[in-house]
Length: 230
Image (cartoon, rainbow, N blue to C red; front, side):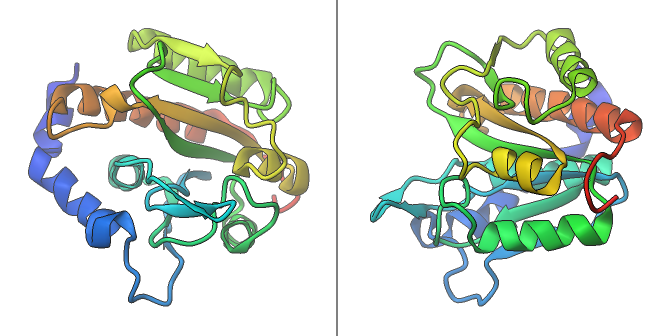
């Protein structure tokens, strides 16, 4: 645990960040014409949070992956990475083939020469893992980056699953799209809800953010671009 980190982030700040997604019962900023909120950073790595609000899948409203949007914005503040989060209900960017979110993402990657995308999602607390890494069975992420990320999780003592329930192999996933269509390294991270409940478990939430901060810094400073936009 890093004391200086905990001095920088408190519960009230986290709750204020989450307000923009949780408004209107997690329908988000329904009055806005903007579908995403994009933050320009300095590291060539982008954190994506496409389920920060509720979304439509096969005619049904799916729940938001709560606090994934706030985690992404905290990582922007702490590391200087780029960020893209969905800000209101609409398509499911991690299921639909194509779609508006991927179009915006593609243009952002082209403009900012992104070499790695970390796509944040939320898993239920029923899962036995703390976090799952989905890389389409190794197809979407270089071996070097996969090793670096896994080592950071190990250093922080997280129980990690690899390409299990959430392998990001579906064509509509952002990780699959980014890898196959843009040629950019990508990984889908499914965070157990136990680490996404700062109201009840702030220490666990901050422990996860602290670990992800180390991952962003490590990959952002050592990764190399293979994307078509580099």
